[in-house]
Every structure is written in C-alpha cells, then in structure tokens.
Figure 1: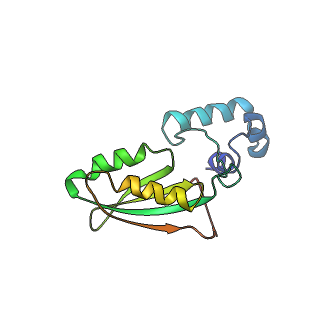
Figure 2: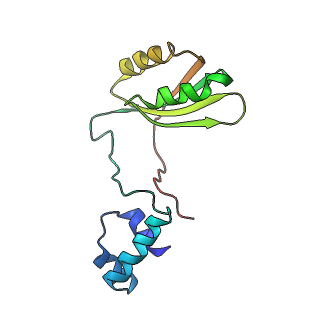
Amino acid sequence: MEILRYLSDNGRMSNAELGRMLNLSRAAVRERVNSLVEKGVIDRFTIIVDPRKAGTLLSVYLNIEVEWLKLESVANEISEYAEITNVYQMSGKPHLHSHGMFDDPDHVGEFINKLQEIEGITHITSELLLRRFKEQHSILI
C-alpha cells in the first residue's frame, strides 16, 4: 500500500527513491512493483496532462440517452472521438455519462451536433465544469 501511495503521487519516483522512503533495497522495491504490475493492481504507468495548460479550455460533461439495443455501439463510437476522455454506462434509464475537453463553446456545439447524427442517440444534455474542488486520478483501496 505504501508503494502504491507514493507512486500515485509521483509515478516517476525511482525504485531507489522508493527504497529510501520505505527502508527497502532498490531490488526489493523493483520486485514488489513488478509483482503489483503482474497481478494487475497497477494497470499502467502514465502521465496526467492539465488540458487547460495544454490549450484545451472547456471541460464538459455529456449525458447521452440512447436506445437500449444501441447502447454498446453508441458507447464504442463516442469513445473514438479525440475530445472524449471518459465514457460510462449509468444505471436507470439507458444513458451514457461522458466527459470531453473542448477548445471553446463553438467546438462544444459542433461536437453535440455531430453526436446527434449517431444512430441510437435519443437525447443529449451537457454541463460545463466551472470549478474543480477535488480531482483524484488514482484510487487507493
């Protein structure tokens, strides 16, 4: 758990650094990290890009109602768009909850128009993210 906690804060931390923090040898840390990867506890090592600093300014959540029989095909098609970062199936009526990053309001409008052309989508609502109070990219159990 301590290895996961440190790597969640800084995925670039070396095995030597982790070893110093945990009072373990570099080899012991490497063995434990490799074991976490092999067991699938660590899915992948990646970076987190702040899209606002990279030039994409609007964070938008889309609730997309779909026909039951088209849910999976719509989810797969939506997932292919570069603007979309996440797609989830939600409980209740058949709908998908998606998150996307956009350049400006015109980009959002054009994207929603494009989505409305997808067969199986019955209704779309969108919400613009105004402020982030907490954002956590990894979950420690």
